[in-house]
Length: 90
Image (cartoon, rainbow, N blue to C red; front, side, top):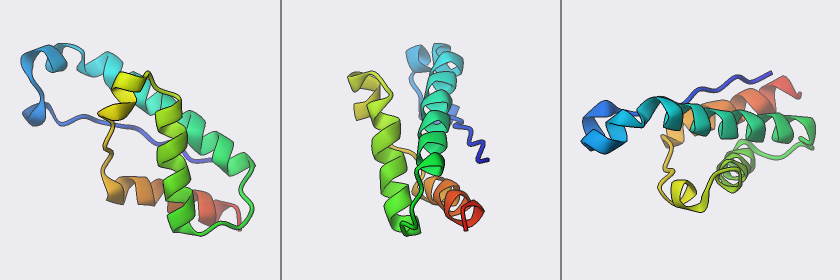
């Protein structure tokens, strides 16, 4: 099972965003974990690139549209989650 976690960089946040950091990290992490679980359960041999794209799409679909529009995860970290799904299902 993949257990991803999203951490936001406080150096790139406004004071208002910093106040909301904890709840926002929780919401983003929850959406990514739900996406990873769904994709793991229906994994059918897709490539790491395909799984990575599916993770991004599925995570964004689980978020409020305004949050989803601003969700730009680190590509290397998202790829790590995709690789974990692909390798755990082989």
